[in-house]
Amino acid sequence: MSLRMAQFCFLGVLVILSAARCAWGYHEETHYPCAFIDTANITGSYGSDGSYVHNWTMIPRHLVAVYDFVIENGIRIPATPHLRACVCKTTPCVRICCQEGEIYDLERRQCLVPTVELSTLPSQSHMQVEFNNGSLRDVELQSRFSIHVGLPCEHMKTVTKGSEYVHWTLHENGTITHRGYTFSKHYCFTLLLHRNSTWEWQPLACAPEKLHFVLGVREWTYAICLLIAIISMFIVLIVYLLCSEMRNSFYGVAIKTYAFCMILGYALLGYLTLHNPANLSNAACRILPSLALMYLVLSFYILSFIAFKLYLSFHGVVFTKLMFWLIFTPIVLIAVGWSIFVGFSYYGYRLIFGGDTCWFDPRNWSIMIYLYAPVFVACAICAFFYILSLIYISEQPELETEKSFESIEKNRFRSFWKYVGYTALVWLVCVCVFAFNYYREERSHLNYAVSFCMAFHGFAALYALIGKNQQIQNFLRRIDNEEDTCENSVPLSSFG
Ligand SMILES: *[C@@H]1O[C@H](CO)[C@@H](O)[C@H](O)[C@H]1NC(C)=O
Ligand SMILES: *[C@@H]1O[C@H](CO)[C@@H](O)[C@H](O)[C@H]1NC(C)=O
Ligand SMILES: *[C@@H]1O[C@H](CO)[C@@H](O)[C@H](O)[C@H]1NC(C)=O
Ligand SMILES: *[C@@H]1O[C@H](CO)[C@@H](O)[C@H](O)[C@H]1NC(C)=O
Ligand SMILES: *[C@@H]1O[C@H](CO)[C@@H](O)[C@H](O)[C@H]1NC(C)=O
Image (cartoon, rainbow, N blue to C red; front, side, top):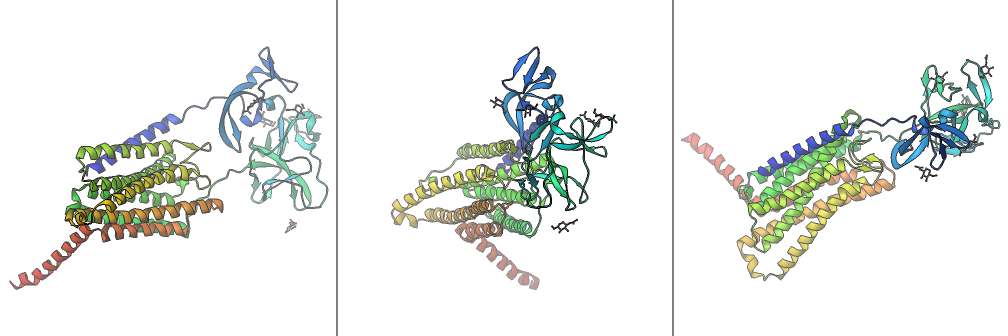
């Protein structure tokens, strides 16, 4: 029981630490003279009298600042501090997506030479501009604007009203508006066909690569299979709690703690599968997956701890309470520390938890590094002690194994190893499915194979930890007999 108390304490510490870090993380953004997109790297430019000369234009001091980041594809990426000047403040900028003669293909997401042979493309050098005095004129861009060619993001999209393109107005100062609505600074102009007949300049906006939340048959299958696993683990937990022989033994306590971790880990996984990240708060989106990660990693290290203990018990080493805590506390601390570390880590300049998904992003390899790698290490530790134990057993003479103590240990050993084998198999399937999905560019961790493996994991626990454990079987048989005798005694007493 004290193990569980300790777990709750660690959980509390984790929650408090996360909350503190969250509050601390919302620091004030430093102020820059203009948005990143309106700046140019002027490192190495000639500077004097508090102003800089860049590309033959004077840039006053107050339009220059040190930036310690760059923005690529809409994501802020840390960079070595460098000088940037707000070049779009001295000469207004106009951004055009593609080189002369190409247009942006909205479906293929790249600049292509248009295939429709309607008419020649209008020249890129002229565009209609509204002046501050209200007059509209077709002007040569080069004379009034600085022209930037390129895509601000990999994926651009049109901004339409309903399904109609709207007419956006380019102003003298470089802003683009439509009836008081200002277009995003992260834009670029492309020519698009209007009503299949005329080319029209349209600004395109960055389309963030959102991972859409789906709750379909696959997600429900996964959740139901997780529920089956949870129920099975719960049965294991109850049986081990009831079984008096297991109550105070190391093995019993360890298996109970393990089952408890598995139940919580799988329950959190199920919860995260069924809930839209958009409906979870920022903090919940980071704390819940961190907790799930902690329970799952901890459960595997409990398995390797048991493997270690089983190996020692063949050598007749008896664990004292102190020794148990000396080994178990660091294991818990490692699991907690790891999940806190992952909760605050970035993968590819994005937080691992708390982006589009409240679990590992299936579009990158983060789950391999942060979940499967520690699990693999735990499995390797297990395998190491398994092999040592097998070697030890094979070296023992046959006669000694006839003793009753030995047979209990051996039986435990066999039932435990069956279970570890099935667990490793289940997780191996998960890893393979993830790799398979990743290469097929499926944007999910899930597959029916993973779902069925989860259910299988539950059955494996019932089969190996209850069905194959002699002590538990004896205990269940005793209950059965007691019930039988009770049933027999009822009619007797009623006669009396
Ligand atoms: C800025 O320009 C300098 C010199 O051209 C270059 O060394 C540096 O890497 C650039 N910095 C960024 C962030 O692009
Ligand atoms: C320098 O300015 C000219 C026009 O003022 C422009 O055509 C050219 O692209 C600019 N070069 C750079 C590197 O910004
Ligand atoms: C508006 O301003 C532009 C340039 O500043 C000028 O060419 C145009 O003639 C002006 N139009 C009117 C109606 O004043
Ligand atoms: C640019 O001009 C438009 C129209 O005159 C105005 O609404 C807008 O505020 C101006 N933007 C800037 C940055 O000066
Ligand atoms: C434009 O052309 C496509 C096929 O080329 C056709 O399906 C569509 O109906 C046309 N739209 C209009 C408004 O003419």
